[in-house]
Length: 421
Image 1 (cartoon, one colour):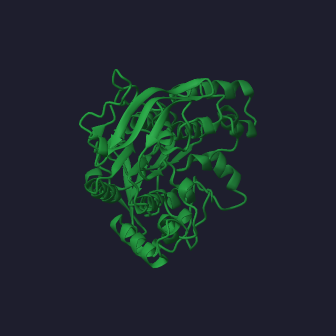
Image 2 (image 1 turned 90 degrees about the vertical axis):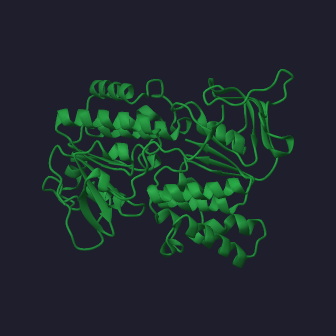
Image 3 (image 1 turned 60 degrees about the vertical axis):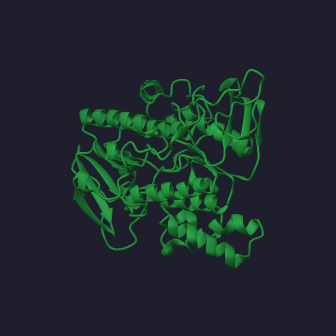
């Protein structure tokens, strides 16, 4: 395949089709294992003579923002690369301010990365590459942790700026609206690359589809309020169907208030969705429900077993193989190894994780495959309350619908599912 100077190319394909591998080879951070050649402006990324030139020529934003972060502080991290090439401090400050504004990071410059949402981390990593003014910009699913509207708006802005500068843009995506912005779309399938028209592409995540019906209503995401006597309003929930009650929840990061006075209840057989603008506290609220962090004020009571799937799958994968990771919850609860494996195999099959991956280390899988493995482990826990933080991120259409179908099964079993979108 060839990509022309100034071209905007999207690379798509099913989970595990090789999108990340391909762009990593283009950017010179992964070497092809077998015969072949990658040339970037006539230079070989894997030649010691050309390596430094390639890294000045080509910048990459990786799928997992933690892979791009060097320092704890946002501004220190973003300034690191331009300082390394001898750019004057005044020019660095001017460029940084421009990208902080365009990426909606004003006020976050002096923050530590562990105080940011994953979407904010991704935007900071994008700023760290844009500030270098590379000739070639490679973005590997770099908008996956953001809401769809913000992701498309940001990608449009980056492409518009690149066209004015004559930059080449190469990005991976499985989302319809993101793919539609490219000059050319290349689909990877079974090791081959084919140019495709948008409507002919397989495994594109559905446009504007939502897997959930009920929104947790009030505040940024809106939660059911307490009644005049201080008791929760359950709407049509009967007392024996209530699985969680939260009263006047507040949460601060330092002096910044993230959650302010949210109250409500969750019931059996219900699916709730937590929505809201970027950085409104959606993931923070889910962690509060999960008991991973404690509220600054207020109380949370849960009645039943609870399990949580976090936004970044790699943070929940720890065993030596996919099958062992999915079996973990069952084994920890005293289920025999044979029965735990049978259950894990059933769930992995339902979610479409190929059998050839079951003995692989989970961190060697693609981001979408890792997501499915984490979800398989969550579903295997047989909990009453299932909390899922952006469970469809990085999935192709097949994975999306398989997860939806599994959630439907959970609801028929009278489980409670809470999804951050």
